Length: 105
Image (cartoon, rainbow, N blue to C red; front, top):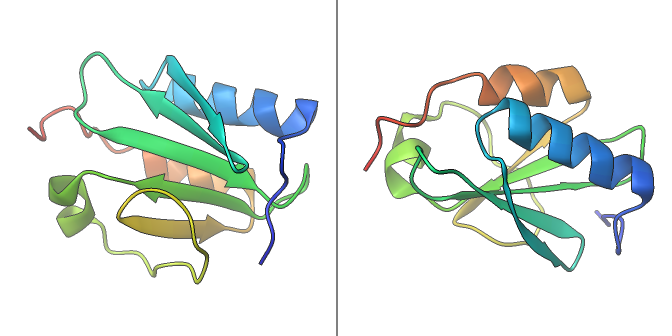
């Protein structure tokens, strides 16, 4: 499955909004269509991408402690991080990231 490379304005803005509202407010750059975000309170990074403005949306995680707690099927897509997930709707991605990851060290 292909993602948008580089991210369009709409995808970039949506990725920044979902990351910011999830506590990952530090934009670390974009590579290969994946935007990387960091947090001042949560360990690790998240990476966000999309196939287009209507989705699907993709999330990659690089924190093993968080990944162990996640009960969600992995997506069959290559990218950054240790694991990647697919969300058909942006709202699903928001709900997934609603979890508080700040307690993981």
